[in-house]
Image 1 (cartoon, rainbow over the protein chains, first blue to last red):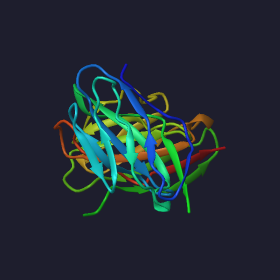
Image 2 (cartoon, chains in turn purple, blue; image 1 turned 90 degrees about the vertical axis):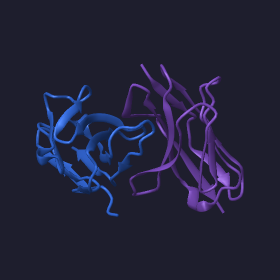
Image 3 (tube, chains in turn blue, yellow; image 1 turned 30 degrees about the vertical axis):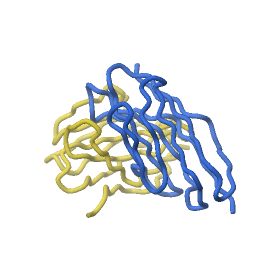
Image 4 (cartoon, rainbow over the protein chains, first blue to last red; image 1 turned 120 degrees about the vertical axis):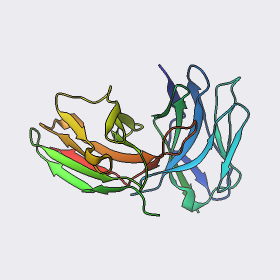
Length: 113
Length: 115
């Protein structure tokens, strides 16, 4: 079945470092891809999304590009802040069931000053 | 705009007891979801409603879990009897219906501990 694989955490960085969190997927058809973020004690929030190949989603300095050839949707940010510390989830919705999100296991990011 | 509301936020029960969680989606959202998030894992869909009808409940353990969405607005998720492995965060989410890449909005979750 369809699935999402994320790099294991925690990812520990100093403030202003470059961030990459890897995400790859397995899916039939043409899924839409998402990154959700979960700050401590809060619910999941949509960070960015891409609905077709070569689309780039971006928000709050984060970016991810939908790469169909490598089935990847890696999350990047050029300069992280302490406030970015959270758990990041990669997810997809299937092309034939656009309302069902399938999540990866999440990657915890810890940013230190 | 108010977000997805859930209650209670935290609940501790003994195994074999019952528990119920309540969710109020964003106004006007026809689709409502319940997800289960076990510690260290990503959320897993338990049940999806479209208005007051069930669209997908393939991963709902129906021997102990039940959910309803009377009148197509609020929803309740019930667990009876609870098992230790039901300890998780139960996330309610909602969306307006159907186009590809539709945004799904999540509540803060109801944290359940079964002892």
